[in-house]
Length: 262
Ligand SMILES: C[S@@+](CC[C@H](N)C(=O)[O-])C[C@H]1O[C@@H](n2cnc3c(N)ncnc32)[C@H](O)[C@@H]1O
Image (cartoon, rainbow, N blue to C red; front, top):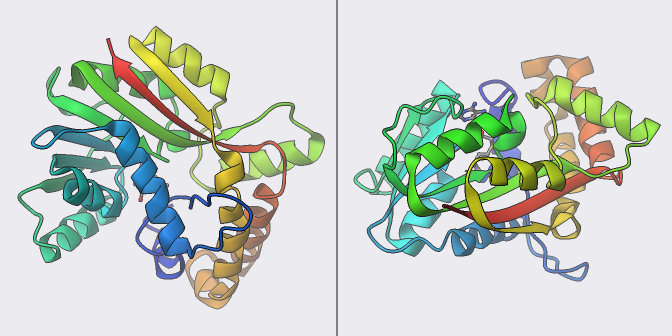
C-alpha cells in the first residue's frame, strides 16, 4: 500500500504519514502543524534522554524520527516493511545532515533483527494497525528494549459497539488499507501487561484527531485523477469515499499510550 497509493498520499498530506492533533474544535491549525503536534505528543511521552538509542517501529519516510533526533538529541533506528520508504527515509535524512543520528532499514516488526536489550526506548507511531499480530510486536518490543525502557504507541483503533454501517466501513478499511485488524483500548491493556509492560497510561484522543479523515478525503479529492492512475478509477473513488466515512462513524477511534518495559 505504501509503495502504491502511499506515494500520492505524500504529495497531498506531507511527510508525516499520520493523523493530526487539534487542541479543540476552534483550533484551525494546518495539517502540517497538527501532524507535527501529534509527533510532539509522542516525543514528550517517550521522554528519551540525550544520547539514548531509540527504535522507530514503522518509520514511514522518517519525518517523525528526524524531529525526534532534533528535539531530544537521540539516535534513532527506523524500520518499515516498505523498501521504497526505507530508501526515501535514508535519502531525506542525508539531505537533512542527520545520517549519523538516524538510520532506516527494511525489517518486519514481528521479527526484529536486533539483539535483546539493544534500545533505550521505542515507539510505534500509527503502525500497529497494519500488523497481523500486535501481541507479537509488543513481545518483540519488550525483547529489544532494556529493562526500564519506555514505549510510546499511537494507533488507530475501533470503539465499541459496532453498528452495521460501522461494520461495512471497518471491513472495507481492513481489506483495502493494508490493515490487519483494528485493536481496542482493552486489547492494548491486556497485551501490554501480558508482554511485561508496566506503568501503562492510555488516552483515547479520538476527539483531537478525528478531523484528519475528512481533511484527508478533501486532500485526495484534489488529486482524484492522479490517484486513479495509480490504483484505477473505481478504487480511487471508493478510497476517497471510505476515508470520509471512516471519519464519521463512532466506531473510529485513536489511542495514545505510554508504558515501561519492566
Ligand atoms: C501510517 S504509516 C506511519 C509512518 C510513520 N510512523 C509516520 O508517522 O510518519 C505506517 C508504517 O508502518 C509500517 N509497517 C507496517 N507493517 C509493518 C511491519 N510488519 N513491520 C515494520 N513496519 C511496518 C509501514 O511500512 C509504514 O511505514
